[in-house]
Image (cartoon, rainbow, N blue to C red; front, side, top):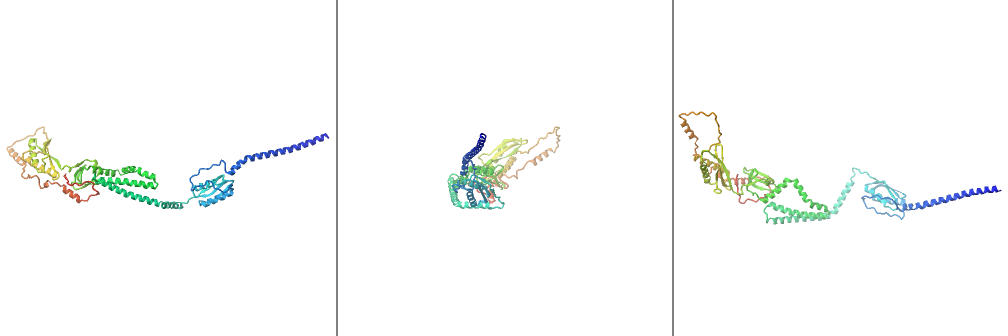
Amino acid sequence: MKGEKNSHMQKFARKYTRKFNASQQARLLLTGLFLLCFFLSPISAQAQTGIGPTATPVVDESPSIVPDQVDIKPTALDFAIRKRLVKILNATGWYIDPQVEVQEGVVFLSGLAKTEDHRKWAGDLARNTQDVVAVVNKMQLTEVSLWDFRPAYEELRNIWSGFIRSLPLIGFNLLILLISVFISRLTAHAARRTLKRKLSNPLLLNVGGYTVGLLTFLVGLFIVLQIAGLTNVAMTVIGGTGLFGLILGIAFRDITENFLASIFLSMQNPFRSGDLVGIGEVEGFVEALTTRVTILTTLEGNQVQIPNSTVYKSNIYNFTSNPKRRTDFLIGIGYDDSISKAQEVALKVLLDHPAVLDDPEPLVLVDALGSATVNLRIYFWIEGNEHSWIKVKSALIRLTKRAFQDAGISMPDEAREVIFPQGVPVQMNDSFTDIHENFLMKSTPKNEDESPSSSTQAEAHLSSEAKKIQEQSRESWTPGEGENLLQKNQSPNTNEE
């Protein structure tokens, strides 16, 4: 009996233990599930409220401003989010076949967008929609055809619309610009009238007037650009004026140099119209001074245009500024002749000639001892307004030769010395004296045919040809004729080379 009782007790214990283990395991399982639900509940709440570590990418420029939040319901479901986004994307007209799928708050976008900005805009729109956890933007850009002129048409339409909207501002700016032009002309005219009291040169008057007018116009242009909102351009115009002038000066260096030289020549007045001048190797009468060249009429009747920069840099000989002109010529006498007697004879010829001035007095000076002659240089002064120095010189050489011959003063030519080391044999005969006398008779010059007058018909009465040359110049055509910047010579002191 006792053994059976023990076996029954053991069976009961094993049964109870199995029950206890099953209930304990059940309690442990329930406890683990409770703890799991407890720890998972904040994560689920964060997922449902949209609060969590979701990163929002940086948004570039977009076609329009996306609202911070699109309200649907306090708690939006996936199908409501999808329906709202599809309606908005279709309403814009920027997308081709837009597709929206929403799974557990994650939005998947697909379809075709016209531009990259439109594609980003769709992603930002979905990201800012209520209860959206994340956005996967799978949209692609449409391929633009080479023959699609719609962007160009849209751009032209935008330009035209902007032009129409800007018409009132353009009209107002044009009015201010016209007023600026009118005021600049008035100021230029007033500046010329003011400067005319102190300056008589037309070039300087024009330059001064244009400068004042240009400054006035620049002020008006600056105001116009300021009103148009082009402040940077206005400052560039004001600040770049000097740089622009420097660039023009380098690009048109020769033109600028001639123009500046014409201003300096007008200020200094080294010559006047009608003056006989020598510039470099050119001699002639001044016809005009333009902003580019100086025009001369040479003694041969040719017109020469010399750049003003060359005139300004060259030595300028004005033969008209002093009407009295000195010239000279050289004559040789033999070594056996008296120098003082020859000087007296030549000086008498100079004093007796009507074209030679007494003040300054003429001079007869010994110039050099030549190989066969003693060279005398004869200086004399003439009145350039009345006489031509080349004609007077010709007459004086002719008369001096006659006077020397009458006084028995020899004028040998240049001789060369010939040495005979062995000597030259000479034979004398009875007829030597007759031959010598005949030789002297034939070699002695005769002055019966030499005219003693101060001028001959060939010397054209020694008159100056300056007036005739100037008359020919006035009748001729002047190439590149421009405004003459020189003063007219009211009482021209003309001289002739």
